[in-house]
Picture 1 (cartoon, helix red, strand yellow):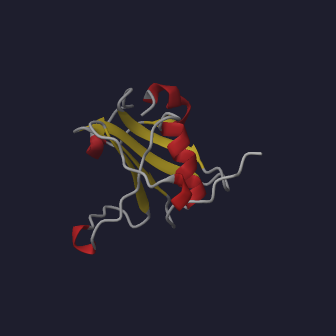
Picture 2 (cartoon, helix red, strand yellow):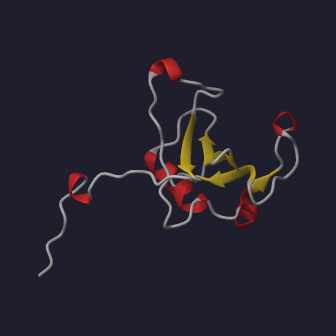
Length: 125
C-alpha cells in the first residue's frame, strides 16, 4: 500500500469508536470525491495482521467498478495487485450495506489467471 500520508489531502479524523485521531502512514479515514460524479467516497485504510485493507462506502449505494478502480490506484502502488473477495454467504460479515473492500496480503502473491483468459492479446506486426 502507498504511504497513507501521501493522501493527507483526503484525510479526516477517525471517529472515536474506531480509535479517534487522524491516523498515520498505516491507517486512517478519508473522504475521496468519486471520479464518476464527485459523490464522497468514505474510505478507511489499514495495514495489519499481514494484510493491507481498504474499505469504500457511500451513503445510499455500493461503489461501482470505476470508483473501486480509482480507489485502488490511489491507495495501492502501481505494481501491487489488490483483490475483492466473494466468500460463501455463510461467511458474510457486514457493518454497512453499501461497503466494498480491497485486500492485499503481505506474505503471498495473489494468483492471477493468464492474460489470454481475460482478453485476446494484440498481435504485433
